[in-house]
Length: 510
Ligand code: ME8
Image (tube, rainbow, N blue to C red; front, side):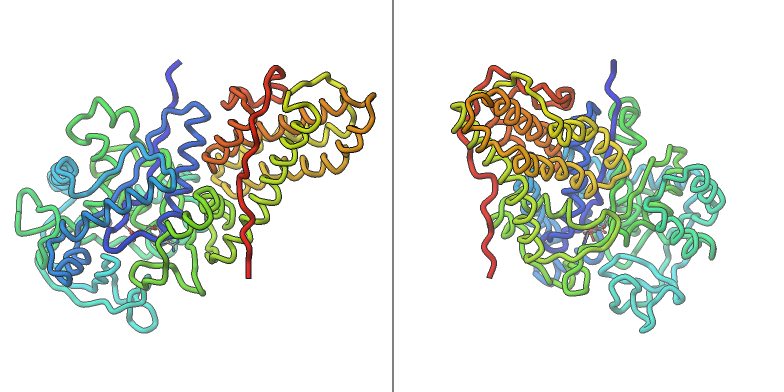
């Protein structure tokens, strides 16, 4: 049977400065979802990349006395290195300066023009350069600044091309109505409808002549394509659109999930769908707008410079501590605090105390009592049910949570099995069983049950903390590490465990 496909994307980030933990947040979550879907048997296409054009980058390069390309190339090399150190398993990294992308973005612009959806006019308005966004007077904040970053906007007036967003207003509303899951969480849909769509969509300025760092409009070269039109196109140019309609594009489009921060939901749920309607293409299945990581009450941001290189955390605490924190700490969709203290507390509480302890205690007992040999004579007692019945339903609990993108809750459910297993040790008191020769077989079963719940947890944890899962599989010396071996009882009984290794070191706090 042919595998079902799953196309998931992150935003393509601006390489205007080095990436921070906020970019890691989106990318780690996308990675965990991509890995989860792969393990479920999907043919996954996971894409990330960089959004490299626009006035902001042009200015940054000018300030440094280099060309835009010279400015961004090292940032992108560094970003790829960061993704490698976080274990990000992307299938494709798109750069909007890639020749293929540029040519195809031009073709997309031309198609929309040929369809009568792009026309020439004059632009007068307010522009926020750091956000590369146009605003109307009424959208500005109380101080007359950009409502997103609260910095000054400036007036621009120039000949420009416009995209007929207004033409698609009714189709868009109808699409929202007939696809209730399109925008998640629900609250963001209402925000789009009430703040942007109901007041009436205005045609969008989609070309600029006041600077040159962009993709030229193919039929009017003094214009460059508005950076958001260029950027949003990435989701299809990477699949070969519009040149190679038979191959990747047919396989993977429409995207199953665009994962984005809440501040760019409007680009993905208004402009992007209208572009696709103009091109006569299917719309993505879902856009999920997640919340922000906040430092000291404010968004972590490149423009505010209030952050460390995420690799400092990876070096100090390990890649899986950082991944776990990003995935577990904040209910997905909400804003949440980021601090090193919280990262440390989360690591100590969950990864050291709950997971690490369970694994090390269990493996140490196996070694001490049975020379690390795994056996299960099947001497069961009622108390076993506290882990066995939960372990049996856990895969479907996790599936439900992951399908609803409640990533933190999926982890909570997995950790519930680990907690129950720790309690099971206290309840069954293996050290007492070990003193009574008539209880040897019972002790073997107790240890088997513990090892088995560790194996099942490690399989389910693979998408989230893959390095740790691999270490656990290695200690268990098991070959049964795939989702189709999740049934309780699949741990082999003819194996000998390997030496245990410490999974997470307790982090001392002041
Ligand atoms: O918006 N907390 O790029 P960008 C959580 N190029 N997530 C955060 C975050 C924070 N503090 N800060 C950033 C752009 N992010 C465009 C996108 S897509 C066609 C073009 C994440 O570099 C979050 O996912 O400003 C946000 O949407 C993205 O980085 C913005 O990255």
